[in-house]
Amino acid sequence: MAKRHGEGDCEATHRLWDGTAVEALARELPVVVRRLMEIQEHPAERFASDVRTAEGRAKVAMAFLGLTAALRALNVVVLLAVNAGTSGAVRDGTGSSSTLEGLLAVSGILALTQLGLLIVTATVYLRWLHKVTGLTRSLGGEFLRWTPSEACWGFIIPFISIIRPYHVLRDVHDHLAPDLVPEPQPEVQTGDGMGYREVVVKAPPPPIRLPHASIGAWWACFWFGNVIGNIASKVRGTDLEAVTQQNTLNAVSDSIDLVSACLAIVVVRAVNARLQERFRRVRHNSAEVLRAAGVELTPFTA
Image (tube, rainbow, N blue to C red; front, side, top):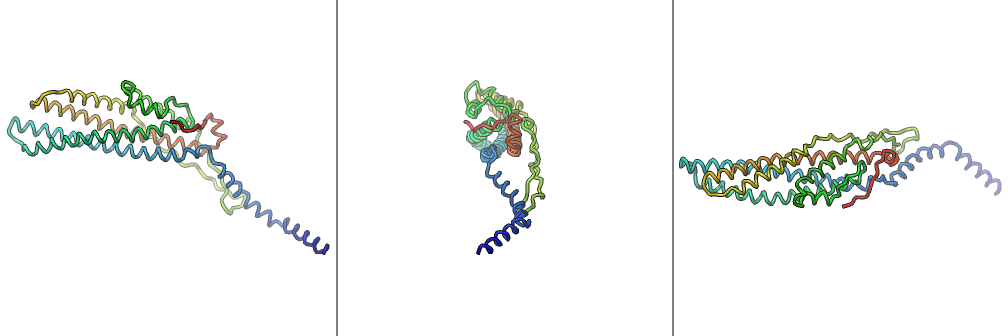
């Protein structure tokens, strides 16, 4: 019995050192290490769902801004058609009264639709701004002084709303500058079933193209269009000259609002692109690299 037991120990020792077990361990060790590293979640991973939410809200906001621009363009055409038809009917006796009545009815419907669309567009836009402002503060770089609540209320509070929205979008855009976070280095990973000498170099995702955002032009057009609209609302009278003047001013106001809506889409695209690029750089850099660069991730706050 003792002899057989000794022979079994020798045989087991021989199997251990014949290279088979060592090779198996060498194959499995990198996989185990990689999976253990995956369990230890990257600090930026907790923001992944918020970044996806911000991107979805940006798309919704751009869709409603595009619809706003289309509606403004349609209203410009209707107002100019009303002016042309009214002038022809009064001065030359041309034009159909039923056509004019139809155009006036369409103009009234468009006015109500624009009011409803303005409320919905403002709501989805501010929901996007609230999320992106919070993420700008959370994803490192320079500290943004605006909280999400302050950014949104800046569009609503009288007098403050004259200039703060411009400051908020300008600061968010600038604080998301890509160069504030280092470009991530390629990751060296081992593949499943590979030996310890076989590795795969995994490059980070390519950077997102950052479009130029004319924030100042957007906000100037927004206010200029509102001023012209207010002037139009103060035109009094039912004679041809007064009606034509009011419709012309409203058409000019809608044209400026159309430009403002298009520029707002550019602003949203630019800020969203910078947010995605910031998250890409933070997510694909190690925690050690972020600390060395002075990038500190903080919890999302409203």
